[in-house]
Length: 139
Image (cartoon, rainbow, N blue to C red):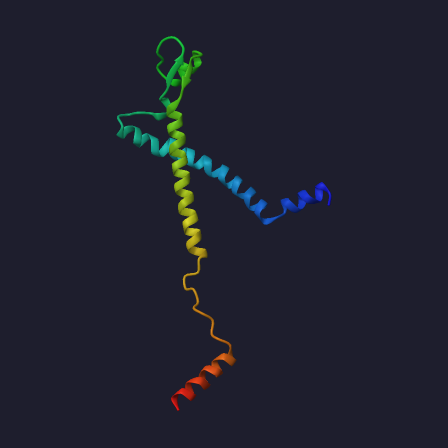
C-alpha cells in the first residue's frame, strides 16, 4: 500500500473527520467564549471587585518607573508579567470546560437507553420443558 493510499484511508475514517469537525467548531467556539468572558463576565466581576480590570493586572520585571496601564508599560519597552491576562485565560478555560461538560452530559442522556430490556425469553424448547416439569410436579 502506498503512502498516499494509507493517508487517504486514515483521512477518510470517521474518527479523523469527526476530529477535524471538532477542531473547527472548537476554534469558532473559542471566539464566542473569549467575547463572553471579556465583554459580559469580566465587567460586572470587575465592578463587584471595585472597578478592577483583570487584563490590566501586571508586574513590571524590568523597566524604569511606574506605568498607567499595561499598554503604556509595553510601549515603553518594559518587561512585564501579565498575570491578569492569565486570570482571563483561566476564566475562559473554566467556562469552556463547564459548557463542554454540559454538552457531553446532555448527549449521554440522549444516547443512553432509558429502559433497558430484561433478560430475553428462553428458547421455545426450554419453555416447553419447563411447562412439562411443572405439570409433573403438580401430579
